[in-house]
Picture 1: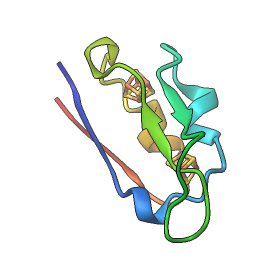
Picture 2: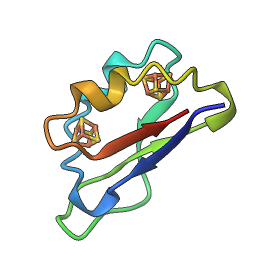
Picture 3: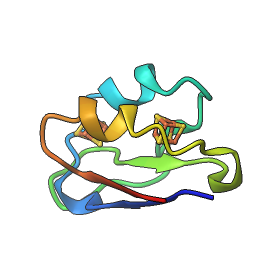
Picture 4: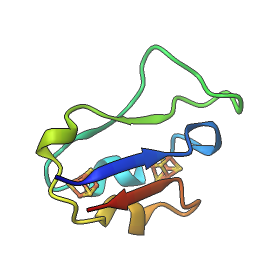
Length: 68
Ligand code: SF4
Ligand code: SF4
């Protein structure tokens, strides 16, 4: 199983990673804001992640780290 970690405080909520996930596992948090005032990305079900790292590759700010 892959493990994802997010530098949540630096996420700008652009949604690029959300759109690229083939498993549709990423969402922008509806109920929280980070220090920058953005809704940060979060994963809905880590167990479903296939570790493809498309999300990490897409993120312009290197917020997501994927470990297998
Ligand atoms: S590693 Fe792949 S499957 Fe997992 S959250 Fe990122 S894009 Fe989705
Ligand atoms: S993790 Fe990166 S690509 Fe995803 S919403 Fe945040 S800044 Fe955008």
